Length: 214
Picture: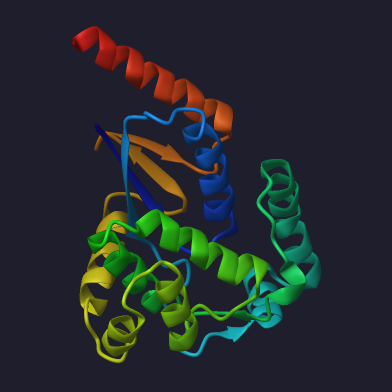
């Protein structure tokens, strides 16, 4: 098996698009060689714990309404092309994602990481839910057949918070400054929401190399 590490944030639209594209490639190869692990990266590490109004956040980040519209035009185009549904009208707040990353970490212990990442993308981008809300995260955990009561208890503590921040910092120190970033076999960094065709080529190359090595 080949390790595929994915550095991402569940409120990053390019991460959502990137996973949608990757999944399109993976479904073509039921015996694909990847072992996938998700890693934390907060787009807004200084976001208040309660989050903030999404419109105010975007206009502050991109210099006003026109800047925000211009910045998100390619997101809309690529989302439509990939089939990643984004209901922008439903998203009213930009949350702090530290707790969502903690849930993704705990899901990894139970081999449910990719499923939980999918559920978080849907909760935020499709349903417009606040994925910093502990009830929302417990609901996601329950849907993923995790122990929602235990997740709620852990969320009420500071369990693994320092670890998530340390891993985020480590990625930045490695040179990661945008997400998604995919790292293939611990050495090949692939930034951005790559098209399915790129992943098909990568998988074919890896499988051919594995066959040649047998």
